[in-house]
Length: 174
Length: 292
Image 1 (cartoon, rainbow over the protein chains, first blue to last red):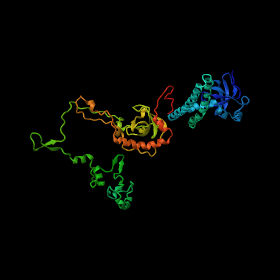
Image 2 (image 1 turned 30 degrees about the vertical axis):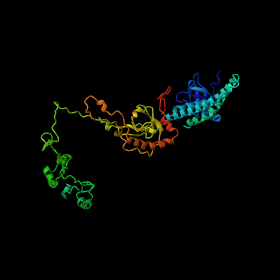
Image 3 (image 1 turned 90 degrees about the vertical axis):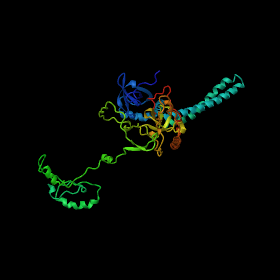
Image 4 (image 1 turned 60 degrees about the vertical axis):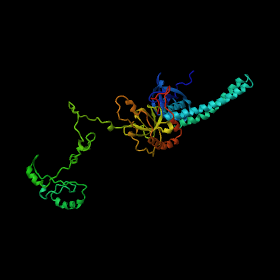
């Protein structure tokens, strides 16, 4: 049921408070509500922090409880948490959200145009495949219709990633 | 005291320093007379006080003695002619002679140019109290938001062009913003817009080296009104020119400005389409959350 546990070395993401958006490692548990927490590579001083503002990630570091900051930093850099974190979908979603909020009016227009173009291409391909399917359905009759209808759906999905990186890359450059 | 030596020099002398020492004066006379041609500075050399002080506020010599000591009998100046006196000299024509027309034709009559008023009010208007800091509109300080610079793309919010995105050119003397579509892009001509009813986006068109004609001022854009109410109460509304008529001058000015701007717009990808589109809000879009 639960997959991520609070343990020594668990890397947590701080969701609100003065250090919102940073990663920390749990060094020790103080009581039911608080933990001693340290984030040497993310600019968080060693301090007590309530569990409520922490969200557990998948990463666990190996260091003994109440280890000093140097040990925490070594473990952190050994595991290369910063890079692993930015490769996760979680971090990417956060980044995408930030970018969207920063979009200027001109950017919004460009995104709108890109989306429109992409959807047109997809629809175009879909229509093509539907027409082929409809034609094939006419000839053999009702028996051949059902399996043929499923196949064309996979093809347009392959086309999508092509066009998607192009407009998204524009935004990512900002 | 120092004045015992030499009588006073002419005021047109140009030795700058105010000097006390009497002994120095004759020596300085020569170089000061050399530079007589240099009348530009006209700095007077002041003599120290010729009236030694006995006690504070009390001098040794009386008024008449001082008159003599300062040789004021020699120094008589007239005040420069004031503007009022100058104006008084040239008297404007008071009357004019006109020929007699109508029945008693021939001959001429004398008519006063400035006639006496035909009406005097029963009560005099009382004098207004002085107020301070109330400036007329022409003297008001014009401000411009820091986000609005020449070349900024603005979104018009009011008027018949509401929602259109438009290029800002300059701020006019009354504080209104001179703005253009350009016309070929979104049918907004050279027009004035009010700063308050405009959203400034962060998109800017590079307008370095673009020359905007000098004659595009507020009076150029002001609405023209005919002022000839010969009709009485009946058809006043007809004479007011309600329809706006496009003049050739406007067309040439539009072309002159737009040709320069269109070239720059074409350089930025997608900018032309952006200016052609209009701004609108939809569900879930909140202006206070948008970054413009």
